[in-house]
Image 1 (cartoon, rainbow, N blue to C red):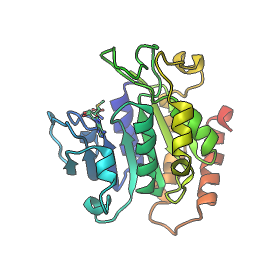
Image 2 (cartoon, rainbow, N blue to C red):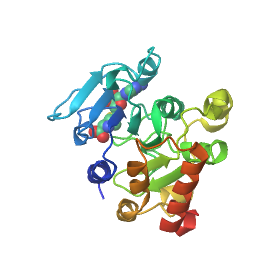
Image 3 (tube, rainbow, N blue to C red):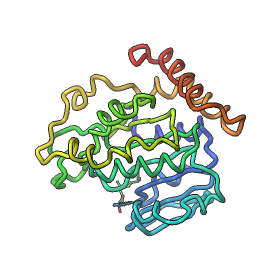
Image 4 (spheres, protein in one colour):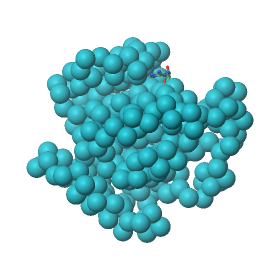
Length: 249
Ligand SMILES: C[S@@+](CC[C@H](N)C(=O)[O-])C[C@H]1O[C@@H](n2cnc3c(N)ncnc32)[C@H](O)[C@@H]1O
């Protein structure tokens, strides 16, 4: 399944109230949002109609998140869906996740693009291919080690895979606290060592199965309700995902 087809169905299932996109380019993914949306990209050049309620920021994600109130453009409503598709270098993707999670609701979903490179060249930090994932993929190892409470789903979309992350905790500072150590350990010089199971897509989920899963319902229906304890929500997501995808349980 092409990633934008997955995205269209994801929006329909989640019906987010506020959407953030880091890395807008021509607007092909941003146009799928129909809620209040924020797009951040220093070099966007929109070529498609954007019908929704969109605020565009021609700046880097680091600049955007360093503003006094990154949620000013949504009137304070936290993001419940965010797409990280800016600069495809490990440390940028890591910072984008740290900053994005802070601005998300506990019922939010963060999606990374480009976590499943198809070749070592495609994963290079120094871009040498047209389609380029860069070295975003180590984020999988980092989240597993430093944030085991998150639910993390690699999805076999074309061309370069998506990673869905739920069970968010906007108050968690683990990644920020260990940022320097994480970058020292996980940012590696080219050529990249892409794990074989990622390159061969052996441990990833089929997009059709993910779209049929029950967790969308939990994320959508619990939004706006009583602010449940994070641990309780994260546990109920893990249980549901475990039922849906037995091998992840
Ligand atoms: C792959 S494109 C985004 C594609 C778009 N999300 C889509 O699916 O149609 C990546 C974009 O990230 C932008 N970008 C590069 N560095 C960035 C940064 N530091 N912060 C935010 N965006 C950045 C680039 O200008 C480029 O337009």
